[in-house]
Image 1 (cartoon, helix red, strand yellow):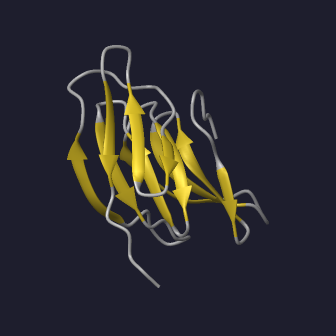
Image 2 (tube, one colour):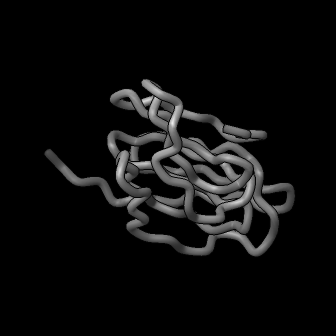
Image 3 (spheres, helix red, strand yellow):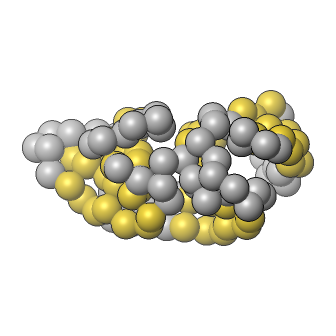
Length: 113
């Protein structure tokens, strides 16, 4: 995995993250690649429960529910129209995102238990 700027994460024996800009999953038991798809560039992600918020390099925010079988993209929308490499931050239902020119605070809907 060539993560460059982004973070990788482990869940249930599988490694997930951006591999040179493409979202991928690797089996940690044998090192085999389960899948590699979705060209998101060198963006940044944040694990929230079983969901993964990914700020793509293109400025799009992408919501995924990754499993060992597929990345399962659920939604996406454009936040910025410029290259975005900065880490994202979540506090409660507020998501803070920025690039070198702009910043935004997005209120995300939360599901109550």
